[in-house]
Image (cartoon, rainbow, N blue to C red):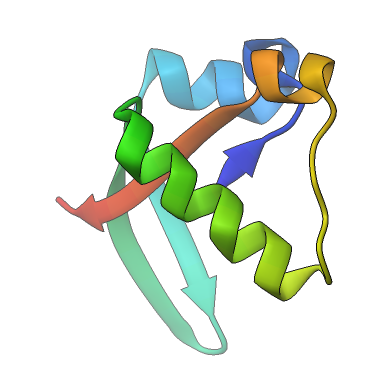
Length: 75
C-alpha cells in the first residue's frame, strides 16, 4: 500500500501515528499492522510492480520523493 502524497495524506498520517489497520476483502476482515518500507531493494520491487500493473507507470521525481510505502503484516 502506498501514499503518493506522503505523510501529508490523511490516511498515511493516521497509519504513521497508529500502524494497526483493518483490511476488508469481500466479507473477510483482517486485523493487520502497517510497516513502513524503507529498504531500497523493497522500494525497487514496489516500483517494478507499479510498472507491471499500470503499463509502464513511472512516478515523477516529486511523487517519488514524497511517497510512503507500507507492507501489511499480521498483528
